[in-house]
Figure: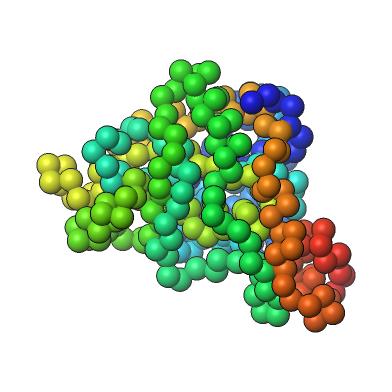
Length: 294
């Protein structure tokens, strides 16, 4: 992948990644969206030769649970600031023996087991059906893997991220069930992030950092916060190095279909979409619906 792609890189830092050393900060901006306020102020700057917008997913003090995260506000704010490629960092558990703690995974699929989250921008008077067969952008995933390889960071490309509601960890029965489904890693934040990023027509990729074996592993014992925190500290440096490598390499050309995900997806009759709805959707759909100053 070449670094000739135009756009801006959005970075959502997950557990353990609340700042980015080397980021040239140009502005810290507070944004209010039609879907509320994002998790924290957005940091606008440059990392390497790439324009970036950084957002700590759980807030700078980690005060938001996975279910409390303002996912729609986060994605909307990033879209408003011109983000075209969204790279997220997530702490995950492993559901497979061959993915021990400290493994870096670039997943390609998701199983959604959340139950209490807003999963779309399109509701309350407007309907859109966006394709999510490949929730992660193949082109961007390859670029992230290439950046890792060029930096000497070992990664596992592909695999399925199973997203649970949380904030509790799984029961042993659940963990064994998820393994039987063929899932590889388990976390709490990929959904609805991936769904909303697709509706926002962003290329989406995740750096998943394995911190534990979940609870299925008979010799590892139950998952604890202490265990996760220990590996988080070790994973954080790898994550920072990989994010910096992606930014230094530059954004890949948009040879995918992510940038046109909403084309033909909005099924509500245009004359039934009120100015208030257009205003609420704002930057998400103005390319297709126009803008409104409602």
